[in-house]
Length: 166
Image (tube, rainbow, N blue to C red):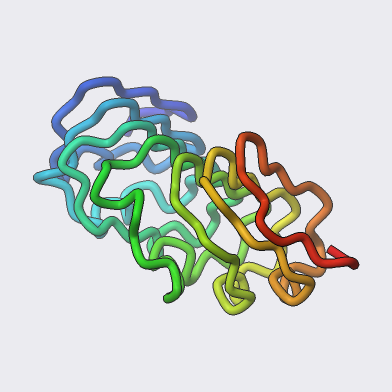
C-alpha cells in the first residue's frame, strides 16, 4: 500500500484500477486526463478522498461521485463542449449524494437558473462558485436548501435576475 495523500495527474489515460492501493489519498487533481476507460466505481479505491479537481477532461463519460462519501470539495473546470449546454433543469447527476460537500466549483457551464432542489442533499455547502456560467437568474428560493452557504462566487456572469434577499 502506498501512503500518498495527494495525487496530481496530467494528460493520463485513466484506467479502472488507477487508484487501487491508494486508500490514504485525500486529494486528487486530474488535468487534461482521458476518461474513456474509467468507470465511476473506480472511486471506491479512494474512499477517504476529501478533495477532487477535474480540469478539461477528455472523453468524459457520465462520471458519478457517489462512492466519495467523504468528499468535502469538488472543483469542475472547463468540462467538454457537449456538457457546457447540458440541460440543468434537472439536477446535475454529479451532486446528487455529496452530503459532506462544503465547497463546490462548477466553472464554464451554461446555467440559466439555479433550481433549489439541486442542493437538497448537500446541506453542508458553504462555498458555491459558478464562475463564467453565462447568463444566470438568482431567485431568493434558489438557495433555500443552502442554509450554511456563506460564499457565492459569480465572476464573469451576466446576471439577468437578482431577487432581494439573496
